[in-house]
Image (cartoon, rainbow, N blue to C red; front, side):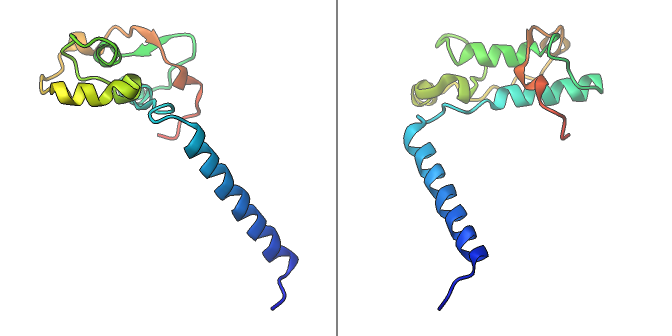
Length: 125
């Protein structure tokens, strides 16, 4: 069976992609690239303000900032952000403070407290 140049090129591309994926999985520690709280903050801003945030304005709501802080402070009662907690996530799960059923109030939503680096992304929403 003879392969065409196109088939060989696709096979090489597949091998390169698989090698890159395996390298990424081997080299990157768990939780290293998770930034879901920043994506949620961007979506919350777009939903509330009906526009995209700029890179120079605060656009993270206070309740999301508390989640980021809770991932670093064991005593905080806010729901912790997993991506920020990193390797400490198993300890947070064991202590039982993973969910928070308190309804959001207006002070949880504004004023925005921190610039969000996700504002540099183009909007797909």
